[in-house]
Image (cartoon, rainbow over all chains, first blue to last red; front, side, top):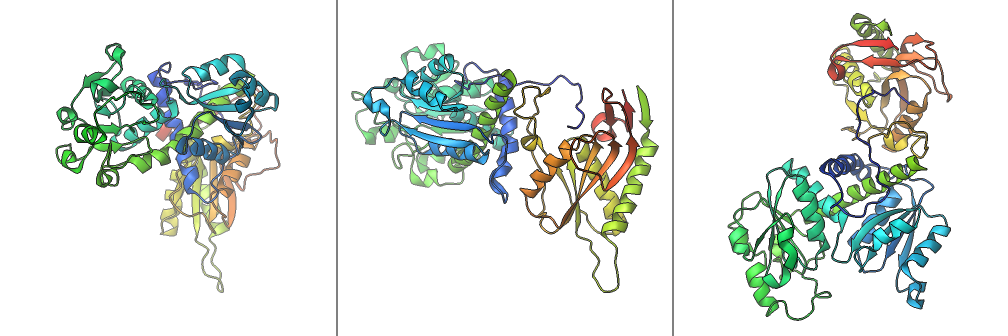
Length: 319
Length: 182
C-alpha cells in the first residue's frame, strides 16, 4: 500500500459496541468521522463495498423492530457481509433455549458479528463476555441503544457543525427510554447541554446522578433549545397510569404547531420513530421544515456501516 | 536519508505528465472530434494534491475545465482483514462531483510500488460507474510490483531497496515539495 506517515494516529480497538457510556469523546468522534466515508455508498451506482466480504452478521432480535433491524441488515449487506435474520418467535427460544445457548449455537456456524436487541438490560454485555464474535448492541432494556445515539449526534453535527454549546431537550418517557440514555451520553460527551423534559412520573428517580438538567414543563424550555428530540410514548412498556389521559399528555408535552412558533427558527426536530402522530408530535411538525426525522434514518445507515466496519477491524487485528 | 526530487524537479515531472497526457488522450484528427472528455482522480491522500495540480495544468493547457476528484480506497484494500495490517486505516470520504461514465480517468498517486493501491482504486472506480478508460499516472515509479499493474505515465523511477521508505512531501499537505528515500 502507499506509504504512510508515521504520525500519531487514533486507533479503534473495541470489537464490541455495547453502549456509549463507556466511550470517550474521541472514540465517538472517530465513529462519526468514519461514518462520513460510508454515506456516499448509498448514493452511487453500485451501492456496495467489499470490506466485510465473507463475514456473517446475525440480526439477533428478541424485540420487535422495523428501522433498526432493517438498517443493520442493509448496512451489513452494503458492506458485502451475509446476513442471518433471527426472530424470537420462529426460533428455538420459544422451546426454552437460553440466550447464551442460542448465541453459542449460532457462533458454531461460523458467524462474525452478532447484532442483538433484547428486553433485558446487559444482555449484549453478557454475550460479549462469553463468545468470540463481535457484539453490537441494538437496544437492551432501558439501558442503551448506542447506534441510535450515534446517528442522532451524527445528524446534529452534520447540520449544526458541532454539538459544543448546544442546548438539547429530550422530551417524553425518559424512564423507559434507552434512546434518551444513549443520546445523553453521546451529546454531553461532545459538549452539549441536555435537558430531560417530561411529567415527573416518566422521569427516572435517580436522574440527579446523570449529567443532565430536568424540566417538567415543555413550555419552559421550548424557546431555549437548539435541538428537540421527541421520544415515543411506549405504551407497551407503560405500567399503571403515568399520565391521566393521552389528551392531557399531548396538551402539556406534545410538539404542536403552536409551540413551534415559540421555538428558535432553526431548531432541529428529531424523533427516533415510530411516531405516534398527533400524540407526541403533530403531523405538520413531523413533516415540517425543521424536521430531520428522515435524515436520521438515512444517517443511521451510514453510522451502522461504520460501526460494523470498525468492530470487525478491531477483531481482525486482535486475531 | 537521500533526497531524490526537489520542488523544481517535481514541477518538471508534472509538466511532462501534462504534455504526455494531452498528446495521448486529447489528440485531434481531421475526422474525429477532439477527445477532450478527461478527468483527474487522485488517491488519498498525496494523490489528492497531485490531482489538483494536474487538473489545473490540464485545464490551462486545454482551455477547458478538467474535473478533479478524490478517491478513498480504504474499503477496497486487500489487507483489511489481515492481522498483520500495521496501521489501522481510517475511512475517509470519496469526493467525485461528476459522472465518470465514458470519461478517460487519469488516476494519480504519489508512488506506485506493489500495485495494491492501484488495484483497490480501480475496483473502487468501477463501483462508481463505467469510465471509457482508466490511465495510471504516478510521481514516483518504484520497483517491487506484486500485481500485474504498470503506470501509463510515470515520473521518477527508482529501485529503492524493500526496507527503505519513499516519502513524498507536498506543499499543500506537508509544507514543502520533496521526495526522499529513508
